[in-house]
Image (cartoon, rainbow, N blue to C red; front, side, top):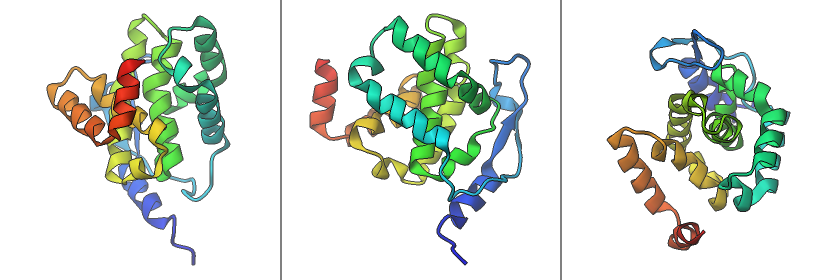
Length: 186
């Protein structure tokens, strides 16, 4: 029996959640209830690959730019995935480093682009922090390319909670100094 993906699958089975929502874009933090996982952690998800390919292709110039065309392409291509993530339907993505990164991008970066300048851009922040926390707990950050690790830190930086902000600073300090210097100068 191949047990390589068994532990992440078991952990996800125990920790997976499905939010109960009032509106399609709301995910209250206090309404999380356990649900079993059905997908195998060993199977790569095509949507994970598509999202990461899209994000890498966009690159640093578009990651942090206010670009209406990029926002529209991102929204058009991944809105249904974002909504599924907001409903807790993509928790199985947390079984792999790439999947966890993709889930954090969907819950943290996607809404900041797709719903720019609206209250909806913050609706999945708590879910993004939980996904990033899971990724760090699994040491996925060490398996993600350096230029993309920052996206696991950003959900904590986007929080208004002081403890999250302090965590973001501590995590950012763990990135290579030259990466931080490059980021500060852009």
